[in-house]
Amino acid sequence: MDDMSEIYQRHAQTVYKFLLSQTRDEELAEELTQETFYQAVRSIHRFDGGCKVSVWLCQIAKHLWYQHLRKHRREVPMPEDPPELPAPSAEEGALEREGKLELLRLIHDLPGEPREVVYLRVFGGLSFREIGDICGRTETWARVTFYRTKEKLRNGGVSDEK
Image 1 (cartoon, rainbow, N blue to C red):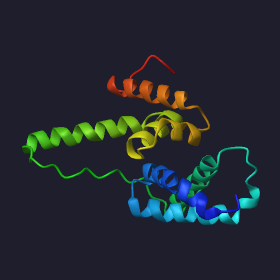
Image 2: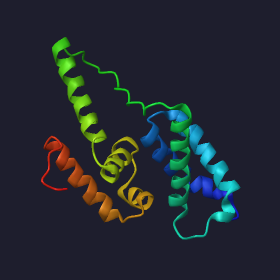
Image 3: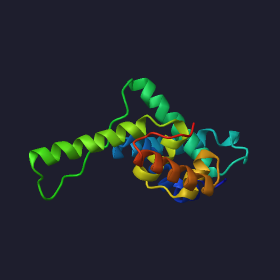
Image 4: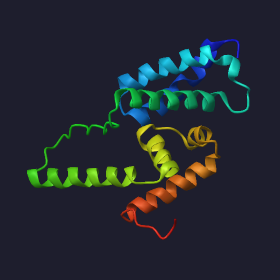
């Protein structure tokens, strides 16, 4: 772990994607990514090699994100909708927005780990392997959790499972 620039080159994109999936704000994700690596340099002596470097960095990033939320006491911003090319009618637009809002509400109401897997995959664009690493689980676990959660959302968030 002598060469932090190499660590930065290898893991900055993963940390940024993770933070972007949490913050849904490119500038804030970039700022927190930089702060993550600053904190990593300051606390490198505490890294014991018990987990992957990317997992350690994402844990630092998650801590910084929670710290930011506490400091600013604000809700997590909702992602902005991209502009649509063909303008739908007012009725179609209202129905589409309502459908997106309902999906986001369903995702928000999910329990912790399934919600985090969906955020990391959909909003963060992370691979199942990266998600498994961040959550301290396997790639297979991440795939299965995402699939089951997606099926649960398709059924309106209602499930027989606990």
